[in-house]
Every structure is written in C-alpha cells, then in structure tokens.
Length: 170
View (spheres, rainbow, N blue to C red):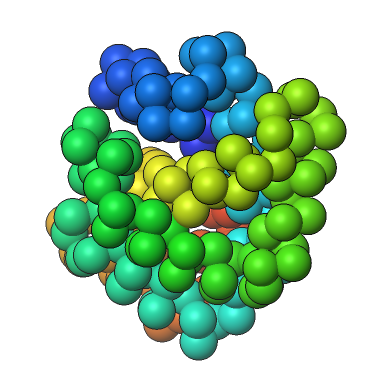
C-alpha cells in the first residue's frame, strides 16, 4: 500500500473526515487535496532533506508517538500538530515560498483555495511522516533509526530517501 492510501485509510477513512471538518471541505475535495499535497511533500523530502537533517526530522515526530498523527482523531485538530507540521515543512520544503508554491499549484489542480491548502499543509506533513513511520512498523523492534537503516550501512539518509522515492512511484 502506498503512502497516500495509508493516509486515506487511516482511522477507517476518519482522518480524511477530520481534515474535511477542520478545513470546511467535502470529503472528495480533501481527497483531491491529499492527492496533490502528499506527492509534493515527498518530492520535497527527496530534494531538500540532507543526511544531517534526517535525524532532526525524525525527532520532530515525537519518538515512538509518530502514529498518533494518523491514528488519533484529536491529533488532527490539535494546535501542536500544526506547529510540528510547520517544523517538518521547514525541513521538507526549505522555505515558506516553496510552501506557498505547493499550495498554489494544488489550488490550480483542485479548485480549492490556496489559503485553505496553506493551512492544510502542516497537518498533511505530520500525516506523511506518520504514514512513513507506519509503513516501516514491522521493523520497529530495533528502534526508529535502526529500522530506517535497511542496508545496515550506518547511515539512514539513503534509506529514507529511497523510501520516499518508492512512495512517489505509484
């Protein structure tokens, strides 16, 4: 299952419902927004996250609590999630200008206002990172950094970027 599907199916579809409620959108509009934003965030990860930044990015998820951003309905509504998401966006996309550009492009493709999509981006960023954590869950017994170092070379940079590339390929 790809990352977009993990997000769409989280909480039996309830995560999409929560996003829809929070931003005043119909469920199909939220799904369209996710179809635009998730690949853009993964592309940003692939292009902008440097090896030394990956550990910090993973740390933003709150250690073993990363699943909460997809599995806990209240997390989508929590103000802290927006702050965490903004921190993730800063590392994934590098600047507010890039975030605005992503929102504008998604707006052009979905018909949803860019202002709403700019507000949605931080929440979706936390969901993306949470989904990546869930996708790797079977390997979690050796710790988050251990599970990401799939080739046991001592570096997680190549492994996380490879995982992001895999999610971009549908």
